[in-house]
Length: 416
View 1 (cartoon, rainbow, N blue to C red):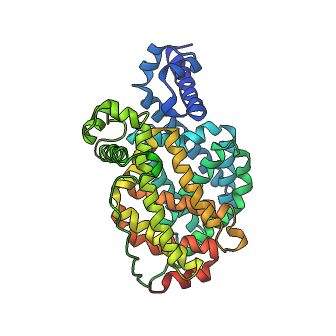
View 2: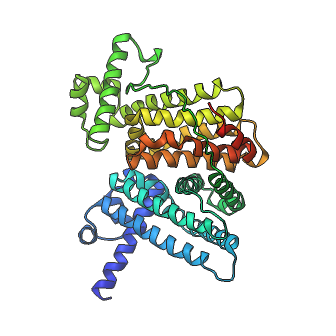
View 3: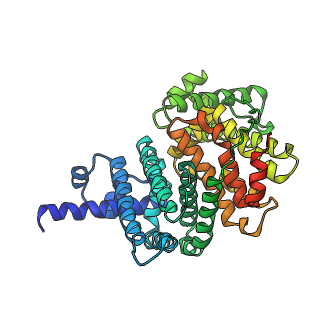
């Protein structure tokens, strides 16, 4: 074959290999050698096409997203269908594309966040442009378009739904969720169109800004616990200032004022120490949300107050949010798994509250995906200060799909 065709064939094989390996073992656990062996391409040919492993993964992401967008847009533009039918056709086609290659869906829905800060930037850009397009689509045949915030939450809910199904090998279940998902989007759209106009007084934030995790009695003596706390604090500070990937063991030891031997006596590696720091941050956030919910007079107002507390706490402890949204994914599958555990706990909490039948299952999962997307986007774009002002709309969206629009409007428009 001509040289250009050979190069293109090698490029496609390398992209396929990176995609499949990232799905099987995670990007952080995949090496260039692994990709070369899977693709049957030489190292010299690899570096003629890509600068490094990161570049290969980013190009794979761009390739999959471009193909997906082209196919979904083509399905939506069927002139023989009305607006609702086109939306359903686009969603059905999206799910079929995912089923045909689940590994590609996992790369663009989650693994891209583990690649590098550049991967997070790409994710943010695509999610933002997709939200703007979705707002225009939903406005077709409607009096008013949903807000960009509501559209972004819908995109986040879709990404979360797709990721969890692909992660668990249940992508064949996706088509069965289409009706519930479209219903959820329309409810979100209705919520956005009827968003509360009366100003609300934000709940006082817990204001916890300490960046170290609590220790348990199992961690030994008071002196040993103090050393662990210093290590965790140093890891949190370094990850926030330099980034998880850039900080070294010597940096951690210097920051904690300990020897490398002392570090290894407490943690197996920097990943384990970082996850301990994240555990402290997530415990503080969950504690603030739980206290707000439990202090409310009823479940509906509890959900409203919990959402408000979530956004207030995220805004006040921005270092913790940067750890969770920017640095945690860079630890690889271990970090994603820890984040999954937090989101799963939130979903179970929502599903356990009194709600209408349609709120069971998929609606709770979509609500959690919408909230997490808002936090991720605000962290990546540096707009965490704006979160408290978005509490009324997010509360309304969550309550609308969990307890119904009438109760949602009543609860979110009353003074707190």
